[in-house]
Each structure stands twice: as structure tokens, then as C-alpha cells.
Figure: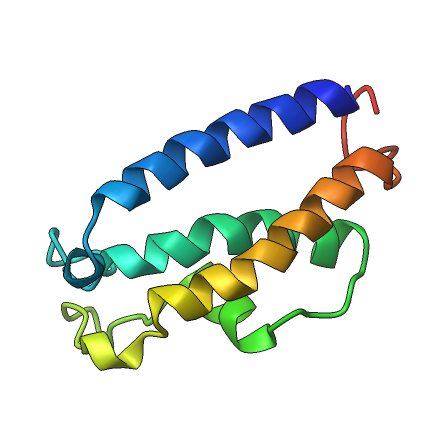
Length: 124
């Protein structure tokens, strides 16, 4: 089970990393769909999703960066049903996101390799 989870997560990360590598720094700050977040949100969202579910929620780890973990879980929501009004400057840099994501990934990997799986994974 652990090997399968690790392999599947590694493959998914490789695919998404390759996709994000295609996007320029300026492109990450674009919002291709007016109602959705800027692309840079998704760079952090994938890591926050894994970290928050596995390390924070299942294992009770203290935050690595509570601000990022909340920001990339929810984003910057628009007010009163309007389109998002955030500016590119409202978002952390891609380098800052990647610097936070690296230890978050390592913690998730460590949890999958050695943490308790019983009770939060079927067949664990």
C-alpha cells in the first residue's frame, strides 16, 4: 500500500511539475478564467491539499507555514459573488511557494512511508 501511494503521488507530482514548468513567471500571475484563481494559486494548492489532509489533519502536525496552508487551501475569495479582485502582488512569489512546498512534500512523503495508515486509509 505504501509503495503504491508513494508511486502514484510521485507520478502525479511529476506530471503537474512538468505542466507548471511550461508556464512563465508572468503566466503564473494570469487568470485565464475570470471566475477562477490565478494560476499561481494552483502551484501552492496541490501541496497544501496534501499537507493539510495528511500531515495536519490526519497526523496533527504543527503548520510549516500557516499563512500559506490557509491561502492555498482557500485562495483569495471574491466578495459578494463578484469576480475575484485580487492583484498579482497579493500573491507570494513562485520561488517562495516552491520553498515552502519542498519541506511540505518531504513531510507528506515521510508520513506515507512511515506514519500510521490505520484509520485514515482503507486497507491500511
